[in-house]
Length: 214
Image (cartoon, rainbow, N blue to C red; front, side):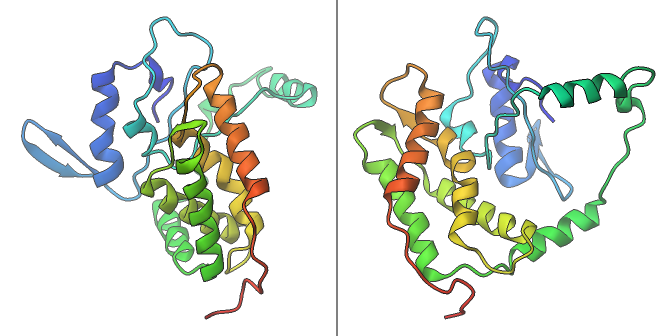
């Protein structure tokens, strides 16, 4: 867990690249394999710019998704205050899942069926990010694979053993928006989100029985 990762120096940020992609680290010429399941979750300070270092594209591309937590509602904020009245839940937090269970769920995702037409649909979405005049750099092939993985995982969470178009649309913004670089840098983050939303509306969606194996 990297808290406020954009406060880390570029050298520290780059040290995560090997661990995120190869699941290993190299120290003084010696390589160490990281124990499964290994993954990186990072938070980012979205407000301050002084003393922060934006993540380079290569690093951003290694994150499966970028999500905005947002702010709590009034009801959620009241509930938060009640929880912290006498105790700190952080002091009594316990694990909710074992390493073995995480690996088992990951293996289940590999069995989720994706219709060939939906593979083509995802490829069309990514292709649009590479061709539009508003985009400086489109989604990489790694982003295409991560869109596939995320859609399959979302389908599993929904209790299905196959992907439907709604699964792809549900994860597309989180998976793709942080991977594109807009030509206009003014509010580029929000522009990237709006761009992904717009191509989801524009790219034709095929019609099929999505659970039919071919």
